[in-house]
Image (cartoon, rainbow, N blue to C red):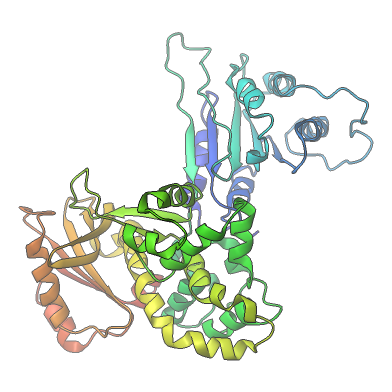
Length: 476
């Protein structure tokens, strides 16, 4: 898989590998999110063993690791040989503790740290306790052996900090967990269909931020052509993707699919979720299903930034635009795929596409404030979210690293005009968030070009920032 947009995570991993003490890392995320590509890039030039655990019983997984260790050259990495060194079925297979001790002895004879990666480690269900015990053993003297477990949550084994050999009495390094989510628009926009930035924004609203889904598209197409060919035609590669992902993670996906279909129409409250699953008699029965979707990295639970700590005023949303699109538009048409021409299905979807983007666009605005607004304000957001309550609704809000609070609205369908600033000012007066700060920033994020009157109104005040597609794409 192509490596896309994980520079921050890549830097974090490389820094961890440079530690003179052994580190323990868990990299989590749903299938296709880019875990393996990130790890492969992070291991370049380092002595390592990278095992993707096969979907087989524990002895077969241990046998495969044993074979890899036999084929790991003195500089680390695999030497490319196959066949003769594979253990025979009658050969005794070392235990997990024995395998990791073997590798530690090998590392002790070298002058560089090594990295052991167990990918798809959620498949270690039967051997989880044995693996955890093996990982908990301290390293021998010499270069450290760093251990990385990668896989989806739930199911990935825990890792314990390694008690340090030296210096005496020093606290062990806590395990690091990298939870990979969908990539932001800026990181993937160069691979999305569409020539103009606003076209690529639309493509992001359809295909989202999972590298696997983006790889199925062709950047030379228009977004609507890519939509038809990848999701609606009879041989479309992503036509059944949403259901396949759900069935891979869950044995009985029907109620989860119903919840995701509700969330495919945008953020929803608890009552909306309960109403979407018709065979549940009380709203409390929804909780374990939502919790599982959250643990899978599919759904996010959100609260207004100015909400009280115990507030139950929460909203729920699907994290990745592709999943929201699939469960809103493709799932209801799944029985007709291959029976009805893809162009007919596309014509049914197009009138609702802007409404879908109205719900996707706020997240793109928050991404911009978290990662990219430094280009304009010399500081990214140190906290970012939304504000809502009686009399105000601001989908983008937070505090910059400079301490300046910001309040913003996003507009995909609605054409920007000067009245939007007045509406934003009215909302700011209704919330106590950021109250008392000398400077408070107003932000408008829109798809359509800003009219001259709005540009003049923004230019007359130093507390207003206008952001269009080109700025979101890094072309402004």
